[in-house]
Length: 271
Ligand SMILES: NC(=O)c1ccc[n+]([C@@H]2O[C@H](COP(=O)([O-])OP(=O)(O)OC[C@H]3O[C@@H](n4cnc5c(N)ncnc54)[C@H](OP(=O)(O)O)[C@@H]3O)[C@@H](O)[C@H]2O)c1
Image 1 (tube, helix red, strand yellow):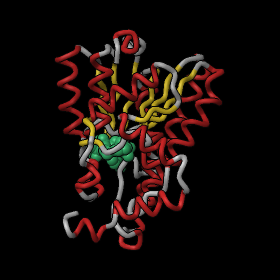
Image 2 (spheres, protein in one colour):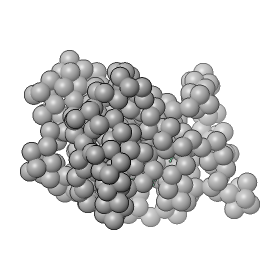
Image 3 (spheres, rainbow, N blue to C red):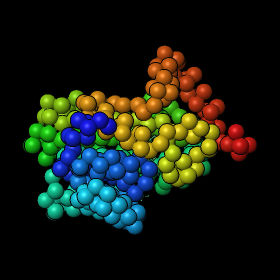
Image 4 (tube, rainbow, N blue to C red):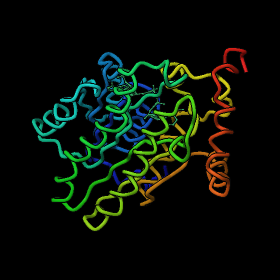
């Protein structure tokens, strides 16, 4: 992010979900360096506490920690109650928390799949719905929604995950237009493979992460895109090229190619 992009959030409060690791933690670091105050949330309170101490001492930021499990239906409301209870005006909402589940659809438990929909989609809609009215009233506010390059096509063997990310992308692009007249900017950040804990949580094979980017780079791309009023940013030239080339190919061909690349049997052979 350039100095002028960063300046937008100096002295403002940003709420980041999934700030205990990966892209969310990197976004927190970028925003703290830009002079923003932070509310960080995730399940691992120890990680959040360590992050808060680090950012306070390095940047002098005000950092509030709130532990929440977004698999729980009441979690979004609890986060909102925490920030309103403290009188914090959230200028930037970062819907980043999310996870994937790799494998044959029938081998992933129903519970895990539905938790994924809850965290990746339902909680995103709920948190956004809670914070938007205040932003509309103030006539300003920013929302970053972390989608994925998986949002642009079917991805067999992470089919449900890719569908949750397609939801995030379409949701973000839709409300970006609805909310623009109210001074609110919304951007979908679409990373490709990124070196975070995502791969081990999703149990995804290494080969999908050969060209992985760093979380810090992805965080900068997302915040810069949002600051510049873009409604969708894809991180990485290689990823942008891949998505552009998919647009001209038949959808079933793309899905077949993705199935070949993601196939668990190849993963077992170490492919
Ligand atoms: N890494 C990639 O290759 C990649 C690519 C495209 C998109 N993305 C997206 O980027 C976002 C961030 O993922 P990441 O790559 O940074 O993965 P990560 O390192 O695994 O971080 C995921 C974050 O989400 C939080 N989270 C997961 N389940 C949660 C729950 N039930 N309640 C509250 N927080 C929860 C985790 O915190 P706790 O475990 O402490 O709760 C953690 O802070 C996700 O939305 C993911 O879909 C990642």
